[in-house]
Image 1 (cartoon, rainbow, N blue to C red):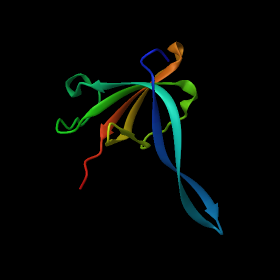
Image 2 (cartoon, rainbow, N blue to C red):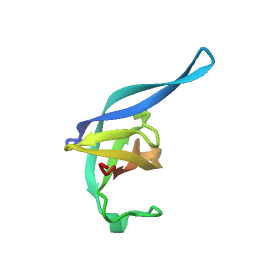
Image 3 (cartoon, helix red, strand yellow):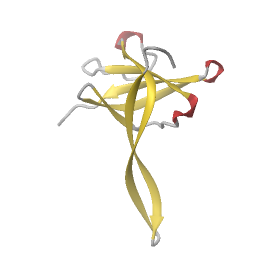
Image 4 (cartoon, one colour):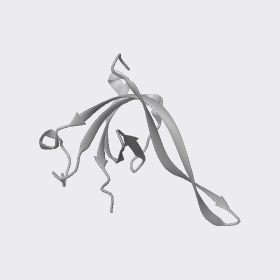
Length: 102
């Protein structure tokens, strides 16, 4: 995307059917994206939890990442919660929310 891009590993589950039963298979995919810390006060999403950290990720259209996929960034786990279509500019803007450890 630009000089500020970095590799980001995305984790998700792919569902298949085996013997008429759904099977969840964990997968991981490395994408190149521009990652920056998002200001919770400027996010245009419902139910912003100010105790959590948010990331704004700009990734290529070919990254095929989906809502509820997760990633690790600087030893913190995040979940993809919302996506904005900026296909006119060749990228997808996504918001990731920190997943608190129990």
